[in-house]
Length: 201
Figure (cartoon, rainbow, N blue to C red):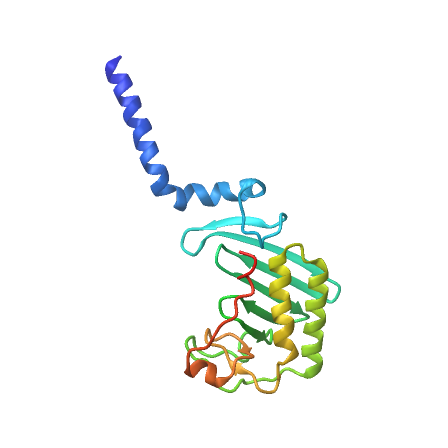
């Protein structure tokens, strides 16, 4: 009897010790999507966002999508940043809050892409004023569907950047995908990055 109780206690202890160690790898990814409606989330994440757990990356990640009259907005967020991609036909615009840059992707897997780490070179393509205006329209449509102050702040920042974007003077983006509204000098010296989430965290 004593041996059985000791073995049971040992088994419970081992399980208790192993959960914090193995949980992020095996248990959290399986359980988090089911518990998403009950889990605490950053204030800038809407209630209908789906949750996943990625132990290799940033841990908890929230994602949601909005269908817009002329395209779509795909969101991804963690406790520290937000990424939004506005899609217009085959072309997309992406914005990361920690980079504070508008990145245009032509929708062609080979065009406009350079090896990772290269940024600030002249872009291999241009974005017409009409297309910039179309993206600004998507921003307005996404603003009309925004459910949090964070979504509104991020979209407003994108709108402000697009208002002064010269689609003929884009530069290659540092991760090798697409071209951004950053200037060549932004890659040569430290720059002040604006965080649209600063007021809603």
